[in-house]
Image (cartoon, rainbow, N blue to C red; front, top):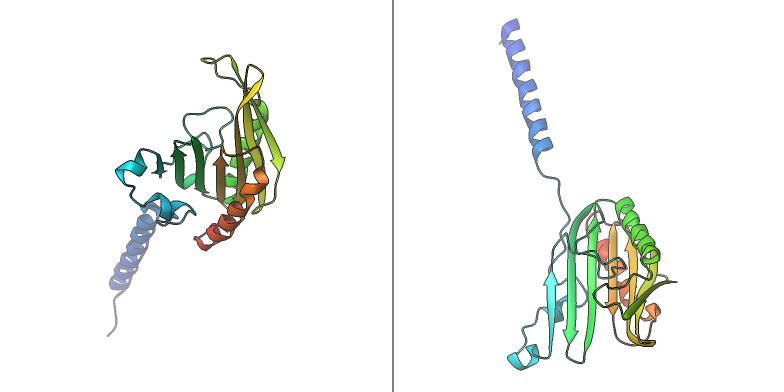
Length: 216
């Protein structure tokens, strides 16, 4: 069967239009976003176990998947995230009546470059706001510091002490590690300032995040 010139032309136009339509659909469809699986963080399974009413009065966990949650190490006291390029985040905080408080946080970015910029910004804030106090409590003095640690592709130990009337009131120790396009944060108020004791968990999570698509 021989096709006429008009039939050939019409067929070509139809194929062209189909191609244009598919291209538009691909362009308009949302890009695939890496999700953080349930129970992925090291403390998450424990955090999801329901507590009895008696236990809940003495301790508790909170799990937040908000992209706008600030870093758990937050020298300048931002109420919302100021970094860019986040694609997923999960923050787990723990408190007890001891009293004690700790946190685990994982933030995924669209690229390693975005994660690197976020870590650089956090380091800069630790210097810029090193002695940022609380205007509502002028008697309390805060001093942030950073320490070299090894975890993931790059990492920094970070934390602060608060003084009141010349005495140490509280000590916060933390570590921030980057692996590929992920930032990993651990924070605790237990013990003296020693970020090295948190690097075991940071290194473990730095290996684990490479199992997520497009992170490493």
